Image (cartoon, rainbow, N blue to C red; front, side, top):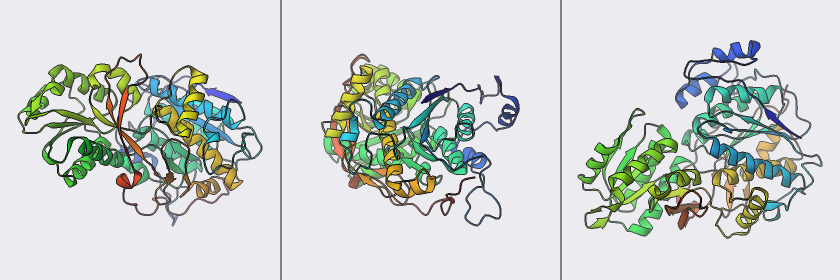
Length: 469
């Protein structure tokens, strides 16, 4: 049974227009404006004094789950709506397959598998979706609403690292497993990691190392790079990891520059790049900022230049189909890292793509694939654990290895719950947004090349008791 949540509006920029909020709205109004992961940690990762483990006591009323009801929180409206709607499609297709509808998709290819296409533990999977409107404040309200009113066992989705940090903190307080999507900040599975957070998509470190490896394979060792990065910390982390990895492969770093959130014109940086002695320009941006900087780079003629006797090459750490669709010819020939792509020919990718296309009449994006895989993996963990209890499910997920989902052999590392797997280095084809084949896959980078060091023990200490109040 599906439920769509109509959420009240909350404007994090200072204008608050609440609809039917009552006392909960007054409480939400007292939340600070959150603009960085540090502030999110301070505001939301509440530690309880006198608790030796550091695990926060839940302030949200919960009961022990007796059925599988899961929630999707995604931007179905606002600036990230295209990605959010793709997440919803992947999510709802996974529910259909779990409940025995359709052709089963990756349930026919995923190994090992405990599911039987008859729901989970013999019960039909229930679900609820919530639109966070691409807004941090609305996200906060949505998660609390799902945790208290809908009594869900798992939350999947997200549209950014900040959104996922909010979801993760409240999930940890409530004893809800969080299968995150489309969040790349290293800190999510490091500084902010909790026993209940699992990430299937790549983080900034993996993206940077993979991009360095893929570009070095194509361009050789003797290249000179100029790094231009946004003020977002995680994209700077991606640039830093690429810089370190490329230097290990023989590249020289000529210059690193950072732009501010107020930057609207990049011409001075392009001119500086041209005169710097570099011949590779790395643009560490994401979302609307990346779309704009690619547009300006194309207009400036960067990709048409010859420097140091070589054609100039451009690289971006994180590529997505949404970005490729919105940049069209501006991303032609640009290197990037992709979490997954529908054109892969392994059995899992083919099965999912065929199911998705039959259901929706279009090729799936990486966002749809991530949410689909996360939902199936969570459900399979419940079946393996023979329990809906969050700590039992978390134990079932930790260190779990699997195949048949499109990235070779994958594993949720027990040390941090980051999924390690093979990923793709691609080049944009520069085709109009009406085309679905927007990338040329250059290399599949093995997970052994990009695997990051294991972090320390969980921030939250030991797992919460399964006795959820």
